[in-house]
Image 1 (cartoon, one colour):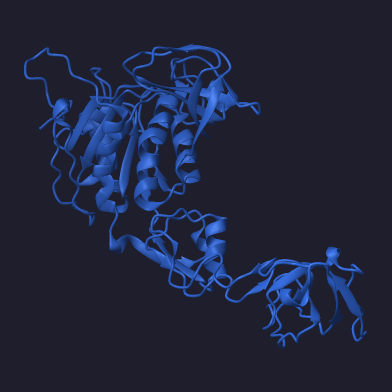
Image 2 (cartoon, helix red, strand yellow):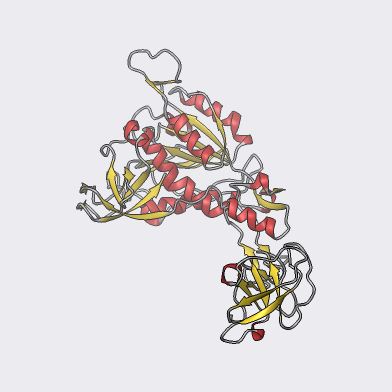
Length: 440
């Protein structure tokens, strides 16, 4: 049975060990009641939700692995981590200075006898009344101490030589000053990191501070990337008349690998549906997701649509520019996403749909953080579409647009550092208006 626009999908059990997937379009996306009736494009949010529903089955307990902290950089945390110890595990000094009992120093200051210093890593003796102990940053606070006076506030403002008996004059100080109390950062038994957290250097550093040397993460998602088209040839080959070099494969593979995905990239598939079908079937058992570029529009020779005949897939239009034509479903039970063939369109499709869904499900890749910027000049946008433009965010907080609206402008994309979002319902914005941008 051929795939049709807006058709509700019910995927069969995965034939290659994947979880059963199910994706049902919104009722408003169903086939028109009468031939020739206009089909309402799906919203960006609606399509993202459909992609999330399609891929939810990939999130399962058997798709996790435990690895060293060094190997887990960029991965997503599979389970909550509870702190096995407090941070800090003992009260310690925030400064190089003198450990004191604040009650020993009246408002006008006091001269105290200097006792043995407290280096970092040592277990000090209790502080005697009327004394001050030189203490290093991070060193354990002695019993009887409730404050630290920084060395620069002391007279003299230096530590005495080892073995030298001396006194020091210190100003009055409040209890708790420059003392890091036990658990002031994190208490034992509290949640240190939530499941789904993207593990960057700071998160891995926290796990190391808690004494952990391994962590359980979601398994890396493996994507089959298949570019299609008779008109494209691989870079480095002779360029016959009427042909263009394929940029989609390199562009998307780079974006996916940078996002932490494992990518299996096929050779360019010609516009012969039976060959594409064989290629997909060959690789499907070893991958989690299939992504194709090109061949998803309504033309007579759309190879991806033809190769998907008999599969549980649909081809529809999303109210987005660029990247309106989209394919979604399963191929032999493997989740399938069909992106448009123009370079900017396929990258925008990845950023708008696959990247945020994987980030929400697995904590990897890291989600794009939205930033507000002011337009350096005005723009126009189709009112009934979510437009994504390429731009450059400047240090003064303004964003300038790179190139026009066309989805083939690779040079403009290469010169950009942000995606500029113009939501559906907006037809024009003026210079100085605020927009949401995503850093690339």
